[in-house]
Length: 111
Image (cartoon, rainbow, N blue to C red; front, top):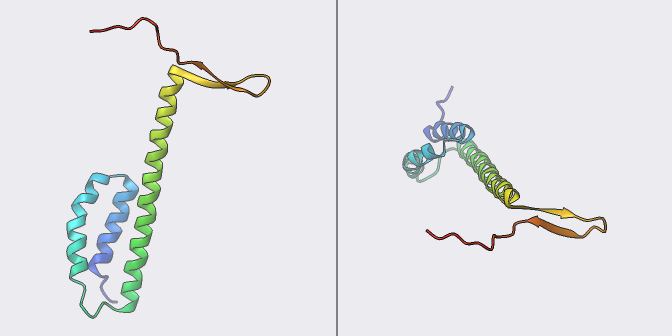
């Protein structure tokens, strides 16, 4: 059985790191990944290996994008919760949206 390409092994490790959410560790993989990509033969690896590498890169990119989307949703939700403590939106009997609370005090404190 042919030995797996070292870049495929590194991409598998990258996938596990993304799934674990250890994004700081991704920075450590970048130089190794770049070195392995530069070490690919100039005539290119076998088509099957290249196809596997491409699929692994695409899969990791999809996972990373999903993680970034998730972080974005968390940030948005935290903002909504913070805003909810200050005010919230409500709808009246006629379906008109109004904001309840959120008024600043007329009294301003200065240090």
